[in-house]
Length: 251
Image (cartoon, rainbow, N blue to C red; front, side, top):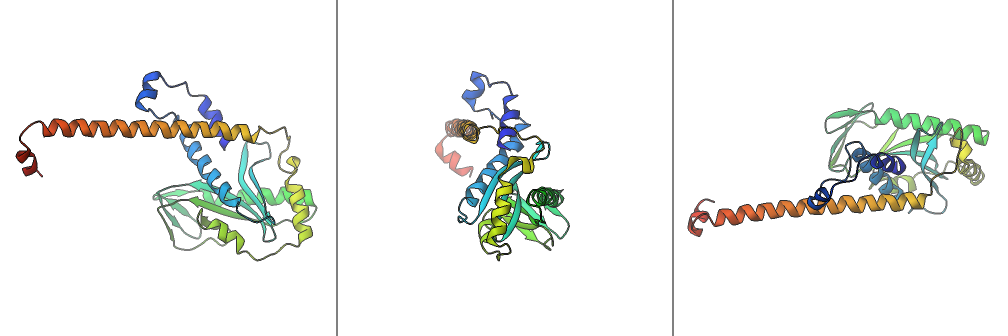
């Protein structure tokens, strides 16, 4: 997702000097949702980094022709999991057995999560030579609320604050030898990709994305400062329009 965010963002013309001065959002309309998604994916990746050495975590795994990827694949004694991350910071989420709504709008996250797990299971099973069950997990990033009417039976739905403990509390279902075989298969690019090529350097992508994040944060600070300056100017004009007593009486 980081690579796609940067690719889309590269299509936007550079901001003018004035736009930079006033803090115009550097993100394009197309790159903005990708940017939020990439931030959520990175946040969950950092959380998964706190799993013990018995776990293997793969990030942004391209599948098939490489036009789509799985946010995270997690392998350990408790099994194999595909994690689909969705950044809905500050949004109200409603969960039912067959549907999920974000801000009152139905989303297709459950079916997408099932599809990702099924693709992973098919490819890992073929690579290992035996059935490899895969559990789909939907990870919601910092929702304002999560109302659970009924949980789906085949997709685990957790928040970013819950996912680490949820994984750590799973009971072991794989023998060490099974974990080793699945891990070895998962680490081979040809397990996932029809025509594997040399991936882009993750360190370079990370550095470019951090530069973009810094630019976005800087623009946000500038906009906030301009807003404060506007409020201060309006307040100064208001206070200068009459006696202080009249101002106080107006409140």
